[in-house]
Image (tube, rainbow, N blue to C red):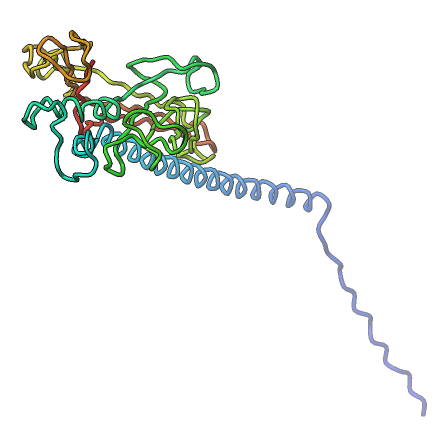
Length: 311
């Protein structure tokens, strides 16, 4: 018997999805959220960069200032014994010479033998460039306050002579080593003098103390003498006669004078200048990554070696 198959009704499914409007709204929301996230990331990145720049600026500036101050403290040191010991007879080591043949080894022999070396090595000089911070702008001129460059020497190898490195040595000089030191502000850098037999601010070889991440916007050197006890700083100038008597006043200026023409032998009528010196150092710098990140540092360096300036 034939039977009629049972028909199963077809199942109907409703198809769903996002409308174009819903997709556009979702996209807008995603862009807004992503923009917020990116803004936070950028701000964090900028803040991190500023922190790195500020840290680098602070570290380099402190290292530079420390190196400058420690070296300037040594300025003017000279081993006075060697030039006196070798003044006449170099074949008698450790025997001070009676150079004036008066039968006594005394202060007059010291004046004649050692003072020329002390006078040469003990000098500290400050200069300005015609354009501040530009060593190529012309001939430097002497100055005393906020100067671009400082020149000095010290007897590094303790031989009683000023080392010029190379070239032709003058009186109380030799080529055993290099002792014509200096610092200067030039082209956004603090520079240290490392070579050159002519002691000047615009010749020789100079080495940067900072890298390209730091821009030095000012480096100034100042030397000021107090004219009264306790006034200003402890840089003081005394005026002495050739026999060592002090005139009793603190000086702001002093000019050595030679009355008998027998330089460097000092006599009672001569004027000698004894300088107790301090150097002010002021430095400003900024980060090369962000000019708004700056630092300003100041210090006063007490030079440990008094300078006896003779005519």
